[in-house]
Structure formats: C-alpha cells, structure tokens
Length: 66
Image 1 (cartoon, rainbow, N blue to C red):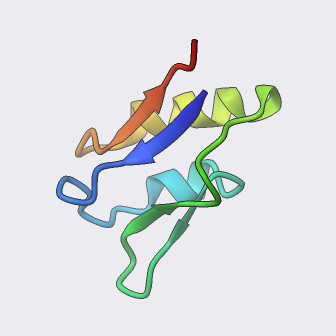
Image 2 (cartoon, rainbow, N blue to C red):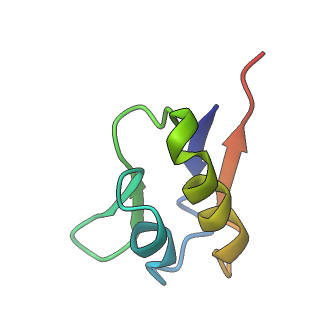
C-alpha cells in the first residue's frame, strides 16, 4: 500500500501531516507532501486511512498494491 497526494487538489489544510506525521510532511508553502516513496507499513495503515478520511479536499489517495 502507498499514499499519494494530488497537488492540484491540496489546499494546505495540514490535516494529513498532523494525523500521520510519519507519512506526510509539508513543503515551504504549507502544502502536504508524501514522505519517502509513500510506502505505508502495516502499523501506519490506520494513520493513512485517517488522513484520507479527514482531507477536506479529498487530495490523498491510497494505492493498493497487488
């Protein structure tokens, strides 16, 4: 599983990096960024799903790997 942020939709509310600081950070303008390659470890999965559910712009996506 990986997370991804759509930069065109992100408005910089910061909920992603507040809820899942191990997965998300912010850039110099306060917009959300994915840390590393976006890989979500099993223990980070609840935080990733919480960040997706709480993004007011629906800019965060979970990519399920098969």
